[in-house]
Length: 260
Image 1 (tube, helix red, strand yellow):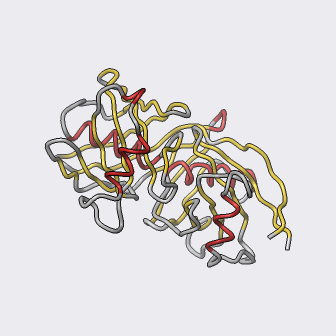
Image 2 (cartoon, rainbow, N blue to C red):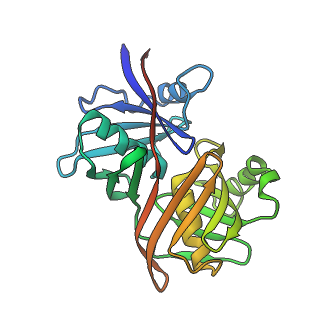
Image 3 (cartoon, one colour):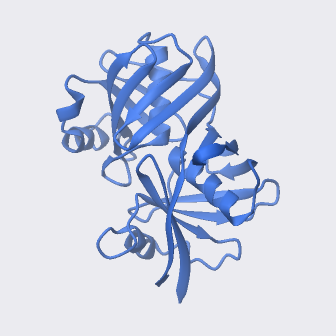
């Protein structure tokens, strides 16, 4: 069977997009999804996303990591899916959709800029050397020296597979402060099992964590990721973070067909 796919990227975080509103895609075929995401034997992507019908919202987001397994929320993937839905004519410039972590609102602006509302964050675990929080996916956030030369894959894997987070593991973000409103980060993604050029839930986690631990008092924060720039904004009341928005580019790369 031949399937049509679309390739999108958000600050270098790339995804295979499939319109599955007719429910034709074999969603339980882990090996197939893994092959489609493989950069040598397939299309190549950090993840695969299905756009599906939903009875109460504009569409449903179903996200798979590149290892073929269905996963928790992906912020950049969500932004790219909004751009994809807009391209298909499923939505206009504003939308409400459902994902694994609940309801999301989003808007599409000029120059393929997509702003996505993330979940509220009610708990930030502040430790001596790191911070942990869930922004739709679990994230370990740690400030490091010499971020540019830091071995993200090796050190990220050690934390992800270590005793701290058990069998489920965590995504791991390493951070450098640039100024009061800007931070640079590099992310080791669980499920990809490598560093990615960007991570939307990771950028969101870094922005909230840096505010929570007093590295900044800003509520709109610029994030430099390896694949570009993102902005995270939020409202803060005590340790509660609401109206969290992740904003950045979400761009169409190419479309094609592949035999499965």
